[in-house]
Image (tube, rainbow, N blue to C red):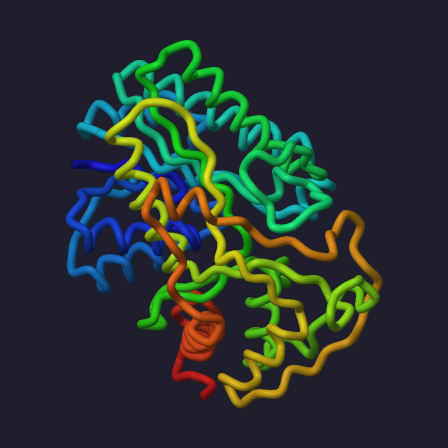
Length: 345
């Protein structure tokens, strides 16, 4: 069985490539490398001792994408490709709407043309906005609060409409909470451009000396220590969730949304403490103003994924921190291989 992976050289995509190859799937990867590195795919080959086709194309280029389907018999698609920085989406909304939505439309049209109707879509917990009750279940109303989240919400609506128009389609909408961690080998991990938007790479870059201190946005929330609480999930657990969803979409038709998280919330200071304990490094931090739109608490109800997909997150917070640190300390400059001479341990 051959799976097309859009955005496969990215953080979650590359880890999912590893899990798919190790499970015996054939894969074809497409990526425009706008916010990822070709080096990640070379390391996927290294980790799995398996080769696969890669096409450097943009989903907005219909002709190039059709060539991929002409040259390969695709059985299903895992769709990661898209711009993903919340803050950037606020300053560049038109770019986000055009890239994420138009790219998905082209992908669906090409899939339809070639008779491929199985998809696992990379959605996000941002579609929930700021729910009033915890934990968050899949039937909560969707009220995304920024352009990035709204592109995910709109794409979910589009994919539901696609199914209504043709009931042969089978689509899993995976709403991620907060992916962290890295492959336990330390060979692939999260490599953000510039100052990280997410907590864990910010912490690890402070630990490795790239950044002076961690900025914590708000310490006056109604939480046990005043800092925001989130549901952090190991990226390898998340990748395995895609395989469970893929198994499901190959068997049935319809559209289903699933939360992928641990169901456990940790505060920013909980994360700092856990990382310091695992790494032996001190993480200096300062308190900054709250960011507009940040919820005090957000964590998932993962009952549906457990019962319908047979999937649960297995890795502990300590595993998440250990693997994040192993990746960053061995790759202080991410996939910039020329700069990664030795390590910082």
